[in-house]
Length: 307
Image 1 (cartoon, one colour):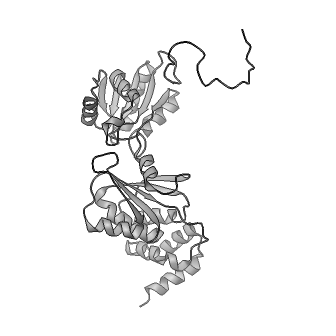
Image 2 (cartoon, rainbow, N blue to C red):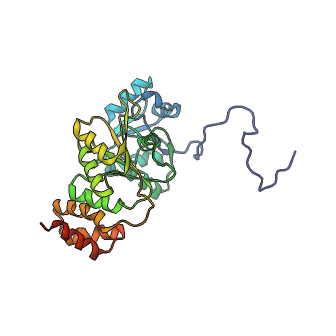
Image 3 (cartoon, helix red, strand yellow):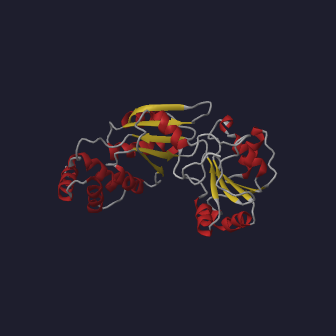
């Protein structure tokens, strides 16, 4: 028998005969909480592992049980385990029951209506509880609207951040975007179709009309559409007609051409004032986020408001 040094790298191929078992960090007979990504549009994107888990899991915790059963039917999978609802309104209360199944050696599959659980979808609280209890958690990766939109946007992908859904209220949205105005990484956002035009208007105000961006709509579905261009152009497009379907916004990062001038930030301050914020408070937050002197920004904003 040939001896192997203890620090030698692992071989790329298993030395044993026969097929390699599925990669899992779990011991045989050990229960697990499994987060599984579901198709974001095209059912053919479902992985073989997702199909197997739907068929074999002891419990399927679904954001919408009807949609999950419909997906299983499209995939030709018979769900043999118990299917329970698991959404934002009952996630905290449901966690103990799900983890009790895992503790007794069962498999709990967590799925949402589309994409990866925990990413702007239910799942985080039960994962947090499983980690705190020392119970196994694993993942069956797959479709992701965030990564699909980022890849299709034509914007830099080497560094990016995901900000989820923007706040619905104009003032809250303006504050969030003010904090992101100097962000150098590409920014990925989710948005409801009926709020896309307002969101793009707010992005124009916060980031400037010329900031490159993309609106990715109905990804992997029949009417998939990706529109790329400056924010102002995309805002005009959104106002020209009804935006439908699931939408992901991808926005280029702030240019690395030095600090912004106070005059550039005045529209952002005035938009926040129009939304109900006090001028001094708006100036203070925008100045802190952008690195512009508060005194200069306040003077510029006052000058802009003077008839």
